Length: 281
Image (cartoon, rainbow, N blue to C red):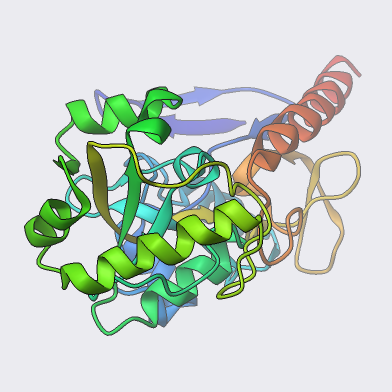
């Protein structure tokens, strides 16, 4: 039997032999995030409001075990006023990250966890994604960010630095150094080896202020290869299946971008087939 409460606060009971729980993670449940990662207190999240971990809590109440609950991925580039994720495609298109002093400080194309850690380590705990018209013209997402009001633009690097409150001498030196790395296809400062596409020299010039935000929870309930939920003794809870971000132990300590899609399709299909098979039997 499955019981839930709908939007009208009505209690509904459904007789069933099996159920698949695919309710997502807990990135939007700040108390739950902080329980497992106290260092993430105060972080915004890119997730929808429904990502509260309710499915994990529901399954725990019937004895489900959990794994990797402290493995929480933060995305490095999130607009903090709206919690809107700024896509890697901007950096991948040739943008750089600079601090409030106008300097690059890390390899922008490193993994999410490492870039996030570098931003958090800055005294100001935020950075700017800087790009030019060449990058904007080749990336539709940039136009979306401009339309949403996230972007500060200027006709020249000096004007952009002044708008952002940076030392323009340092900022101009940063662009000169990066453009030299693009020309040589060799980043001596930070070892960036990818997306050295073009110099940042075509106005107008653009910047988005960003900081990390909670993006994906790798922890969740334990399952077996049939998608069955396991109890704390690693034994199947008959009739209970799970897939997607509600499940832990799939992605390890740092989910690779795009793998959540493969996760829910593969394990969702598997859990669905097994649940249907049990229901028919």
